[in-house]
Every structure is written in C-alpha cells, then in structure tokens.
Image (cartoon, rainbow, N blue to C red; front, side, top):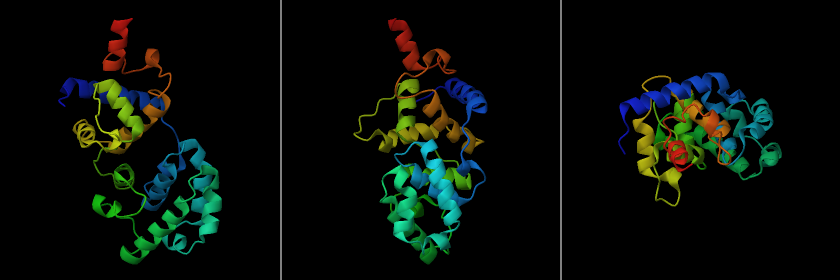
Length: 222
C-alpha cells in the first residue's frame, strides 16, 4: 500500500504534538532496563495497562533480576499475577528467566529470532522489547494499532488475525519515522488507548481528523 510522503509527515507531526500533551506515565517506561521491559510486555498481554501497574511494581520489587526470578516459586508468582488473570503467565515468566540464565548469561536478547524462541512472546512483544529496551527501529502492531491503521489509512486486512498480517506489518514499517522510534511507538499505543478508541472515538477532537479516511468518509455521508 503506497502512502504519500505528505500524509506520513502530517501523521507523524500531529501524532507527536498530541503525544507531548497526552502521553501516559508507566513505571516500565522509565529507563531502558531490558528485563523490566520484558516483564511488562508479558504482563500487558490482554490486560489494561493501568491494571498492570501495582502487580508490576510488586513483581519487580520481589524479583529485581532474571537470576532471582529463575529461582522463584510458581505459587508466589501466581499470587502477584492473580489480580491480572491469566495466571499461566507465572510459569512462562519463570521459564523465560531460566532459559535466559542458562543460555544467554542472564541477559535479554535484542535479536527478534531469539526473542521469538521465548515461550509467550509473539511478534508484537518481541518488537516492543527490541524498540523500548534496545531502541531498534522496528514497527509494532497490536489490535489497537490495527484499528487505527484501518481507520486512518483505509487498510482492511483479510486475515483472520489482522495483527499477524504481513502486509499490515509492512505498512507499519514503511511509515516509521527516522528518529525517536520509542516515542513514536509509545505515541501510537497511547493514541489508540485514549483517542482512537474501539468504542466512541473522539472524532471531533482528533488531531488527525482532517486527513483520516474514516473521518472524511463519515463526514461526506453526513
């Protein structure tokens, strides 16, 4: 899908302005500790970010490093994760810690292929770790970003799971800015969570409304 250079420029410019005024503050966004970012990405799967905060803080306090986590009791980890649901993540986190301790000197890898070998990490989580922990210039695509791209660019995926659509990932890659990748990807996540929501998106206050295909289409209809 071809995107005009001017459309990309306006998309980046308006998104950045919105983000500077509306960005969310989470503890895992402070610094670039790859272990902490990896933990946050596992916790954030299918879970509201604000709900993750207390569990994340307690988890990091009790298990500050991969070496400590590898020796954790599953029951103790499950207790921390219980408020989030999906407590099977307790076993995954301990398993990841053991694998990294045994095969990667207790370090989180920055290579996509190695990250994808860790059980529980899909393409989005691996890309998020690469970007937010290692500042790699990679796109991220989750369900909310799929929704934004469908509305703004008019791209409709025919895949059963659009977030796994290679064409959509390619689109996300083609519109990446050259610099400030972390802020750009955080901006996408925050914009989708606060502005371009699944229900009742705030079209009238949207900074992208004048160049958004979804809004333009609806305006013409009305």
